[in-house]
Image (cartoon, rainbow, N blue to C red; front, side, top):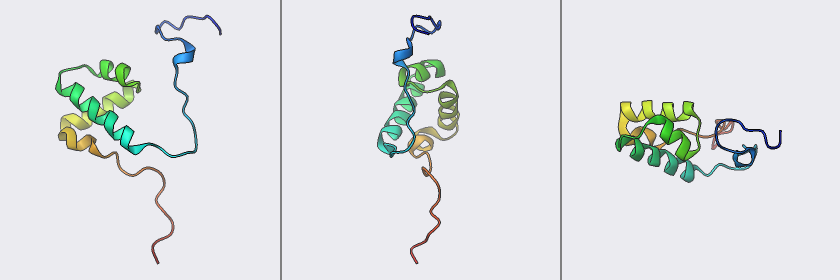
Length: 90
């Protein structure tokens, strides 16, 4: 597919590859959600947020809904990452 235009104006080398394993940078994810909240508050459209923050339209839509219903606090924490532990402290 070398040289093939996708119509989006972004070449195939610009795509981000999701890596499995490893740890997520939860602080960076939170910062990105907070940046989206600032953009929504400034009147930016969901599509602009998705493009600028390099997230899917679905993610931008979910963030916008959460922000509309609960403000910045709704985007503060995304909940726990990963499975719940099977072992307790005992």
